Amino acid sequence: MHHRTPSIQSDVAIVGAGPAGLACAIASARHGLKVDVIDAMQPSIDKACGEGLIPDSIAALSALGFDRNEDFCPFETHQLRGIRFFGAPATVPTIVQAVFPGTPGLGIRRTVLHQLLLQRAIHLGVRFHWQNSVQGISTTSTGTLIQTNRQSLTARYLVGADGHHSRIAAWAGLTQSRLHSRRIGLRQHYTLAPWSDFIEVYWSDHGQAYITPISPTEICVAFLSNHKHPTPAAALQHFPELQRRLAPALPSDTPRGAITLGRTLHRVTSGNIALIGDASGSVDAITGEGLSLCFRQAAALSLALKTDNLAAYQQAHRRIQRLPTLMSRTLLLMDRHPRLRTVALTTFQRHPRLFERLLQIHIGHTPIPLFDPTHLLAT
Ligand SMILES: Cc1cc2nc3c(=O)[nH]c(=O)nc-3n(C[C@H](O)[C@H](O)[C@H](O)COP(=O)(O)OP(=O)(O)OC[C@H]3O[C@@H](n4cnc5c(N)ncnc54)[C@H](O)[C@@H]3O)c2cc1C
Image (cartoon, rainbow, N blue to C red):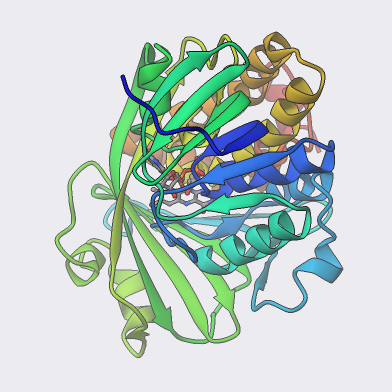
């Protein structure tokens, strides 16, 4: 294969400037590595997302050098106090809620988060190559040659942060995986003062509606379902309580769809190539854990790159993915089995402490008590 002469050489080339790629770039640059990031799109990159940073996502961002008070200050965000579940009124009208222990979460528009991460990466000296679609890779004596539609780059390490349909994973032979779930997400913003400081999840036989306040005047609604809702208005018909609340609101942009997968890869590294973010496996969006995984993986991967030990990243990745995968599968059982959902929600309603404990485990605040239910119920 003929290549143009490579003009750029770096320690790490990252394909994909989504949250995973940007977080990895920031963490690697903080370790003193020379980083290039390549993306087929150009900023600011938007994507269908629930737009909630739960407290463990913020803790993971702190580990990457972000200060919650200072760095988020210039941007429009909304504090999130906890999570509230609404059962389908057709069965038993249940409402359960739990407050995040410690610091609150943050609702933040996806494009704003992208801007925040990008500014930090640029400040740290990361080089960006926008509108460069990676079309092939090959091994050289010093690392990997990356061919885009516009140029060639060489790097000692190559990171695939290129999302669910990662071409880097395919070229590196890392696509062997277990698919736990596949659902469709649809996001719509509405201009409306948030009526609550909680992330609200409305459950129905047609999936969930996930509400995140993202500014004093805007909320984000993400519908998650096994079937494609043609429009947000059609989706809302399955959530009458929410439909009533949103009646005075105006949609503030065009809706955006995305697939959400529960997927575990057998391996996330091969030679000098590593995967991160959705490219490296994912959990269903209902967990709100996708971004936290990206940020935690970024810390682990950058350390592995710095110490030339990708085997350590493979191990860390498995550890980071374990609990969110368990939570994702548990929540999807509630989605698939209406009777189980009713039993779970009414049990949580009767024992609010149980829901609180599960939330604490979910956000990594409390270790799993080996699923001894009496321990969970103890106050
Ligand atoms: C409906 C929905 C709601 C969600 N809600 C939440 C939530 O509330 N909280 C949360 O934490 N997580 C949530 N998530 C999950 C979260 O959005 C993902 O985990 C996150 O986007 C993964 O980021 P990423 O950087 O791995 O991938 P992406 O954001 O998909 O970025 C991949 C990048 O790679 C680039 N790329 C791909 N191929 C190439 C190529 N060949 N050459 C160059 N560039 C390439 C793309 O242009 C893109 O910019 C949600 C997901 C969905 C679908």
